[in-house]
Length: 187
Image (cartoon, rainbow, N blue to C red):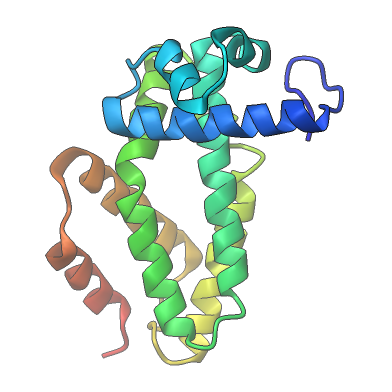
């Protein structure tokens, strides 16, 4: 792991502190919104405010790192699920978890937009990995007969984006997910 501002490798204790700050920031922004203070992030991470700013000189840089971490975590989860025994359950379960986490991701994305930062650029390095991993999950689910063969990764990504947006703004429930899933399943 490297420190974003300097590019130099971090010491082990600095890596732990950075991870604690990111975990706390994700929790704080999910609980209190992105207007929550960096002081609250430091408190929940059990570090000083100087440690937060050493790793993330601005709140925007902290928000960017939280968003990248979320996307990288989802990509890693999707990659791990590629070896699941039940490809259909892996695909639909992953889809459900992405939508469930959408409100937190959306809050971060919107806060970055308000600060003039394009979230697509922020997630640029992690986004393709997520799309590839979702595509692989889709292909496995299709081969298992759990998802229609005429559905492509682009359609799945569009559905995920739409459902995630709806979850962040309208509180999508399990009924709406069930309807979307019924549309993805073979007839």
